[in-house]
Image (cartoon, helix red, strand yellow):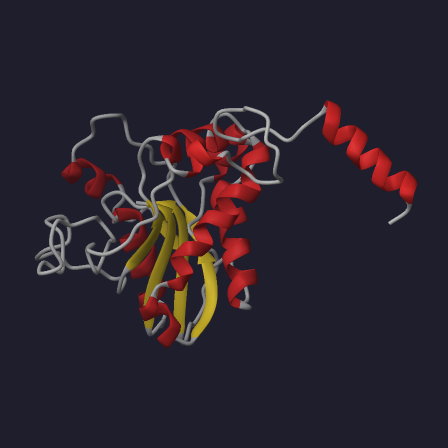
Length: 236
C-alpha cells in the first residue's frame, strides 16, 4: 500500500471514524460493536432444547414445552443468538428499517450456529433459505434471509438452492397465540418447481419462534425426497 493511500485511510478514519452499529458511538477499533453492545449479544449455549434451541433451566431436560409431544419434520433448529434486547433491535432495523450496514454483522453472527457439534456429523447436500413472499420482498426491497443463507453456504462450502416458494404472504400480529401461528402457516410453502430430492438439507431462517415456518418448509422438502432436514437461524 502506498504512503498516500495509508495517509488517505488515516485521514478518513480521523474525521469519519467507525461507529458502533448498536449505540452509534465512535469506535477506536475496526469492529462492528463496542464492548458494551457486544456484551448485550447473548450467544445461545447449553442447556437448551435439543430441537429448537430454546434456553432451559436444567440440562436434565432435553426438550422444551413447545416441542414436546409435537410432530416435527426437521431434526433440529440450531439458533446462534438469544432473540431479545439488542439482537431483537438490530434485526428489526435490518428487516424493516432497511439498514444494510447491519448485513455483515448479522452474517457474521449466524455462523456461530454452525459450530453445533451435531451439525459436524452431517453431510449436507445444499443450503436452502426460507423464502420470502414476493409481496413482502417488494415492500422491503430485499430478502434478509437470502443474505444469511449465502453466508452459511459459503462457510460450509455448499451449494445454495432456492428450492422453496412462499404461496401466501403470511404475517403475524403482535400477540398472536401459538395455535394461530401454527394454523396460519399450514400449506404456506411449496416447491418452486417439481423436483426430486436426495440427501440432507440445511434450512436457514432469521428467527425461530414456534418453529412452524421451519416445520412447513421441512415437510415440503421431505415430501420431495429429502432424507433429513436440519436448520440454522440467526436468533431464537
